[in-house]
Every structure is written in C-alpha cells, then in structure tokens.
Length: 277
Length: 316
Image 1: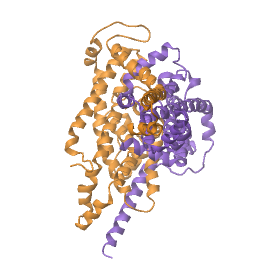
Image 2: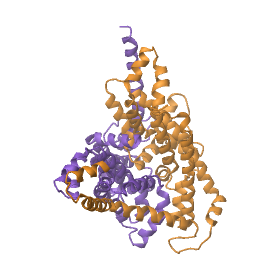
Image 3: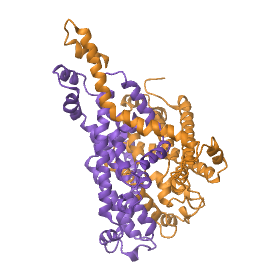
C-alpha cells in the first residue's frame, strides 16, 4: 500500500500537465475553427470570444467566391496523384533490387542513395529548373511529379528496410519454381510489402498536398495554382478578412487530419522510421 | 545475400553446374540493373548532372536570360560584401541555435510526460500530434491571427497575467522569437520519435534500478536520458539541417520580403530571391554551395562531439 500512493499522485500530476499543455497545443487549432465560424462583428471583440453567438457556416461558401477552391483542389489532386503513382512505381522496384537481388552494384548504389539523401535541395534546385525551362515545362505541373517516377532516396531507403525483413525462402521458392524475377517481385514480394507501400504513399500524398516551394517556383499562371499557393496569394490580397482565411485554412487542413485518423498506424510507422534508423 | 543465390543454384545441381551458375549470375545482375534503372537515371538526371552544373553556374553570371560569363570566384567575393547575405546568415544561425535545442527540450519533456503509463495516452498523443499536420501556409495564417498585437489571443492571455504583450511579428526584436514559437507548435512529429525511443528502453533497467532503490529523478538521469541520446543526436542533426533550410514559414509570413527590417530574411529566402526574382542564378548557386558547406561543417561538428555524450545500448 505504501508504494501505491506516490504512483497515484504521479498519475494525477501527469494528467494535469498533459491536459494543460495539450489544451495549449490545441488552442490555435480551435481558434482557427472558432474564427472561421464567427459573425464579422465578433472578430475583433476584446476580450476575445471563443464560442460565436451565431455559427456562420456561410463563411465557407463565401470563401469559394474569393478563392477558386475546386479548381485549385483539382490541380493539387492531379499533382498529388501523379507523384504518388510515380513513387509507388519506382521506389519499390529500386528497393527490391537493393535488398533482394544479389548483384555487384547493389551496395555502391545504396551508398549513393544515402549521399543523395544528404544533398540539400537548394544545390540542385537551380540546374533542375534550368533543364525544365529548356524543355518548356516551366509553367506546367510536369516538374512537380515527373521526378517521382525516377525514385526518391528516403522512400527507397524505407522500402529497402521492409524488403530486407522478409524471409529469404520466399524468392528462392519462386526461383526454383522457375518464376521470372518480375513475377517473384510483383506476385510474392510486393504484396508482402503493403504496409511499407502504404507509408510511402501516405508521405508522398502529404508531401505533394502541402508542398509550397515547388509550385512557387514552377507555377506562374493562377489557373494552375495548387491549394497552398492559392491560400498564400489569398492571404496577400485579403489579409484582413480573417473569417474567410480561417475557413479556407480549415478546408485545406481537414483532409490531412481525416487521413491521419484513417491510417494512423502507417503515419506513426513512417515517422518513427524516419527518426530511428 | 550470397548464400541466397547459392541456395537457388545448388538445388539445381547437375554436372555442368559451373557455366550455368555464371549465366545465372549474369541474369541476376541484369535484373538488378533493370529494377534499379529508374533510380540510376534519377541520380544521373536529378542529382549528378545538377550538382556539376551547380558548381559551374556558381562561377558564372548565368541567368535564365543569358548564359553569362565566367567570373571565377567573383560571386563568392561579391557575397562576402553583400549586407543582406550577412543578415540572412545571422538570422538563420540565430534561429537554428535557439529553435533546435528548444524543440529538443520541449519534445523530450512532453514525450517523457506522455510515456507515463496512464489512461488516455493515445488521446494525449493525438492532441500534441495534430498541430504538426497543419500545412505550413495554414500555420502562418493561424499564427498571424494569434499573434496579432491588438486583437490576438496570445496578447490577451498575456494581459490576463499582467503582462503587456509585445508587437510580435511587427517588431524586429520579436519577429524571430515569434517564429520560434510557431516552430514549437509543430513539435508533435518529434514527440512521436522520442516516444518510440523511450519505448525501446528495456524495462529490466528500471526494474534493476528499483531493486537498488533509485528514485524517479535518478532513473531519468542515469537510465532514460543516456539511452535517449542516440535519438536526440539524430534529431539534432535533422533539426539543424532542416532549420538551416527554413523557408516556407518566413516566406509566407512576410510575402517574401523578410520584413520587419530584414529580421525574417532567411538564407534560403534570399537565395530564392536571387535565383527567381533577380534571375541571378550564378550568384544563387554560389549561395547554395556556401549553405551546403555551412550545413556540412555543423553536421561534422555535431558528429565529433558525439563520443562525449551519445550512448549506444550494448556499447561502452
């Protein structure tokens, strides 16, 4: 009994601090929701009012008239879908070659992959821009998804780890049965790697959805803007209309949060992987 | 991996095994290259070639409009005398040196709290994680509103405890602290990593410490923190690399101007301005290489100090 008491006290203290800090962390988020639903005359109240007297859902459709949400959404989804398709095509192929096919080049290529991973984006950004410019693709969405078809080092690294964890007997059995390497890959190994593919796909969806620097460099025509680019130019033009800016912010944030709740495990796996290995 | 290939061939032994095994090897090499082909091309097209060109451009006055001329170390020399360049280095290092340690301290602290075996752990974890899912552009907008000097929630809170709030992003002395505050809001991802690290620490150590009668504080100091150092080390390196390349938050916050008084002009923002606004691509390439060198030096310094403070399990 003597040991129980401090334990209870410890738990109460932990709950207290977690609750206080947790609410502190959540408050900007709740403030965004609250502002997006406030009647205009309550925006600048002092002291601030958390719960609007009247829920103004109309701010959401209103935001549409300032901000071509659907067309930006379409642009964003196109880029996201193509880039995700790209990494899901290229990265497992390469990872499989590095992890499971015994050939001489696999080790040096893996070393190169690690080096590429450390290369800062800024160093290659300008020459790649010039190449795309010469190809006439600046001002189109091609530079935002085409490179994905040629692999991305972090995803290759992650999937290689996945493939390495699969038992060796699998492909041996396939090889003895005379299955081609492509069939072993597509029908035996790839299905076993689904959790890894899910994580990679999720990270790419998140990456493309929230990407700002890429669209900023490559897209100039407003008709092609992504949601992020659109929101930032909306901010420049209507910076004082907080209720509308918050409504659009909610609309571009909510899909990610929904996604998180749907595939929480894949999220946590990817993040812990990126931090521990 | 070699054993693997032997097993595959050994099972098909026949008198002329040797030549078959060599054709088999060739076949595997062919498949290896074929499977890796996208990435081999990717490295050549999107890493190797740009890397070489970037070095070349940094020695020229290349712009999109004309091919420029060879100026040797001219760009590098010009940068040394560029006032905005120096300011951007100062701002970036200031931000890195304060926000990275602060993020680690807050992240580890919250992870330790979250690691208490209490009910609702998953809910709390989600609470801290959600802000890190908010896209940077939306984060900017939310915090511009929160930190509004007149009507913002933060200054209201400060007023409640008797502090008259600073002008935050409107004042050059407070703009970088504001940005650091914003970066702390996204600490959730790091918390997940620290939590995973904490859960990797074997319970045996704590049981042994209990037998010896160690209290919570001693367990923290002699077991938890030393065994967390590899994860902290990794996050320190990734944090420094990330903050040195800080771009989206200050750029969207200030519409690319870095105001007030250049106090939010960060290195990569100035690089972006030179490359895509003034089209001084040679100059910007030189900046990219200097950034690379700074990041490399910082990384090496952190690596060198590793021996003094990072403890790996099973080694000593």
